[in-house]
Length: 128
Image (cartoon, rainbow, N blue to C red; front, side, top):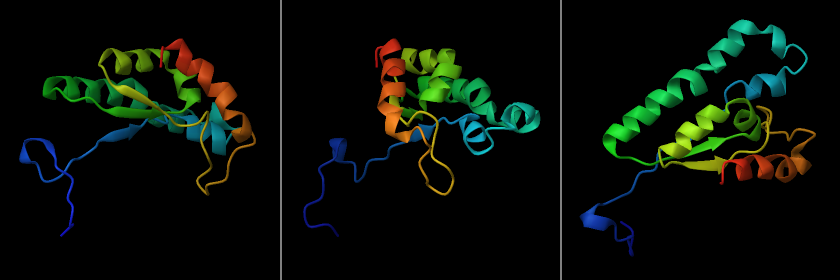
């Protein structure tokens, strides 16, 4: 047991955080940049997140009275501004998740040194 446990509200013994990473097809554009526009099936599958899953998740959270954090790359903020508006209208938080993403191997993209310059104005557009 922990010697000095955190005192949670109402006698709870722990806390749980649900957070979401909403990458959509940003990974496709990062890892397969030259051929991304021709990968229609893969792109369609990856768009499921912002177009189908996020609205369903938001409806579920509204019914349960939950507020969550969604980590969204700047590229997705530019590409899916309506999704960002839905998240914010629901009272949820948008977390910084870079501009495009890092590769699966964890290497930074050539733009990584400029991420604050790309992302800050996008967040400011939404008052975040």
